[in-house]
Length: 343
Ligand code: 2RA
Image (cartoon, rainbow, N blue to C red; front, side, top):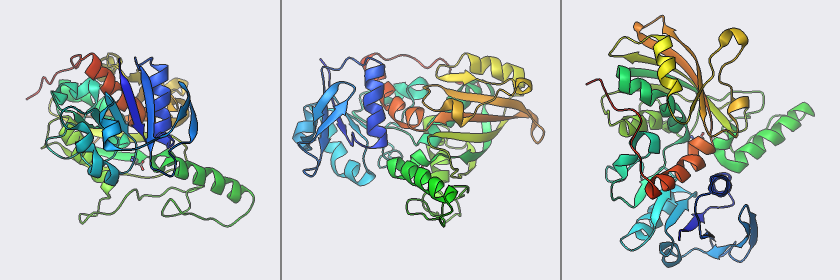
């Protein structure tokens, strides 16, 4: 008997959590949608049937087995620990509020599910990190990644339903000859790319870029791995892509790397460049697995380097799917398929 609560069920991530729970036949007894007094009482259509939104209270949330938080970091900071306190629910938080807190596991189940232990508050990684590490973990285990340079091509969905709507509406406006406008993004996104996601940090990187560094270091438990990221918003609806260059301790050959990636769960190798087959957001959209391809020897780092390209659905592996997989892991834990072989 598993009772699941979702806070933020009408947002882009909340909607996907409902869809994934249903699609993966997660054994729920009942699903409860929690919101503020403004939305409480509304009836919302879900894949499980119509559901009346309940007023959020910590007590009501604590009565669940799992609570997915698909709301702001400030809400999570205020309530997550109280919901998860002994006797309460397991909380899976999609915000960045707790990700870097040492006592809170930051989890991709296929990589570091074991880090959850007896913890009841679990952080879901940022989408950009989650998509990249699916391909990087097997490579790190076998070859030991020392340094990494990442350039991202991020979809509008990273800014929620409002971001997707702004992209669609401003694209239509532009085609109709209207002047460019923007509210959600720092600049008009239609027919543009914007090298600015989240706020700038004192070191000149944005917070989105630093999340890739901080979160990958934490998930891989490799605080000395050097990672530099440039995060760019592009006019795509909901799949992120990333061009990644790695420098490894052990020599790495593209064919061996591809053979390894083919064994990884959650990863599809799409790498037939001569047949025009490589990862693309168009194909990665609405897919559970991330795509990896364009795998080639780096001409910079030579036999100790590889270039690759990944695409993954921002709302699925980047958010809702990973969150549901965390709950699945807790119901039935399993070891990572790969273990570190390079000291
Ligand atoms: C973005 N990574 O794409 C953020 C969302 N978590 O804006």
